[in-house]
Each structure stands twice: as structure tokens, then as C-alpha cells.
Length: 230
Image 1 (tube, rainbow, N blue to C red):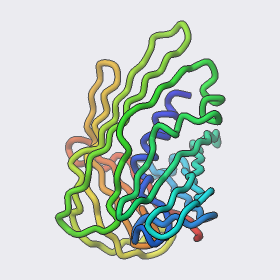
Image 2 (spheres, helix red, strand yellow; image 1 turned 60 degrees about the horizontal axis):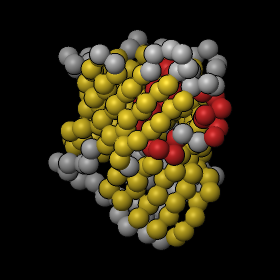
Image 3 (cartoon, rainbow, N blue to C red; image 1 turned 90 degrees about the vertical axis):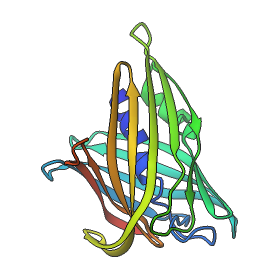
């Protein structure tokens, strides 16, 4: 189960910007009932799973909106894992509350595992421009697995920058996008890893494509928007 919890955290970092449409943001829409489905692929382009989002419990209006993101992760064997987290839009920034990931539903799926999540909310500006630098994000996880060895993990998203504008065609359609480069630095036990990635972000839709690379710049995984409605 812990592997899928790590995958959920990764999905949140990657897909947290796949929200909907409100007056608060051009790129991170918050429409009640909107849903998005993303398909993940391995380095060879083979399907590796799906992640689905649904926007629920939208409250507020104008520049102050909050919502709950219901998320389901499905692996290539068909196993599913569910969670939800809170998103707020205040002025020109969207904030994702990673700590809210540890809700009752997620804890039930953890069994006898105790998990604590801490860190800073990830802020996503409502307007983007080429060359713009974006705020870093950080989340720390402490896992206590009964009599087994405890495990700590820290995930940072750093060096975030809007690289360029680009048109991209994916299964869900063709979109005009900003391309955002970032590096995800993961520290777990004795292992440290930094993984560069790029996100294609479309106005009014959110994230439509994501690619992850190894330290040599070789593509190792990708994710594309395959279906959505708002």
C-alpha cells in the first residue's frame, strides 16, 4: 500500500494544477462536478495506469473559492486506491493542502500503518508568462508500520519555471499550452533522487500532459489527459 501512497503524492504534485474554471484563475478551474482522467505510460509508451479527478463541494465565489478534489489511482492490474484533498483559490493564487490527503478514507486503506503528513501548501499563480519562476513545494511523510521499520520521505518540487508556449495534441484534443519545467527531489531512507519533469498547462483546462526524465534527460514516464468534461 505504501507504494500507492507515494504514487498518490506524485500525482498530486503533477496534477494539482488540473483544476477547472472560476473567476479566481484562468488556468485552475474549480467547477463542481468537473472530472478529468489521465493515463500514465512507461518509458516504452505502454499504458501503466490511470488517475481520475472529480471536483466536488465547491464553495464561495469570485476570487475566494474552495473545493474538494476526489482522486482515484488505478494501476495496470486494475487495483484502485481512493483519496481526496482540499484546494483553495484566494485572489490570484491556488493552494493545495497536502495534509488533507490523510483523511479517514485514506487511513482505512492504510490498514495498521500510521502516517503523518506535513509541509507547505503548494501555491499556483493564476497568471503565467514565459520566463516566470514559480514557488517551490514541499511535503514530508512519516510512516509507522507496526513492528516493521519506520519510513520517512520528503518530496520537494524545485526550480519551477515557465519555459515556453507550445501547441500539443493528445487523446483529449489539441491545446495551446504553457510548458513548465521543474525538478522533484525525493529523499527516502538512504536514497536521494532528483527527477526533472515538464508539465503542459492549458488555459481553462489545467494540466494536459506531463513528462518525467532521468538525470540524463531521457524520458522515463509520461501522463496525458485522455478524457474530461466541465
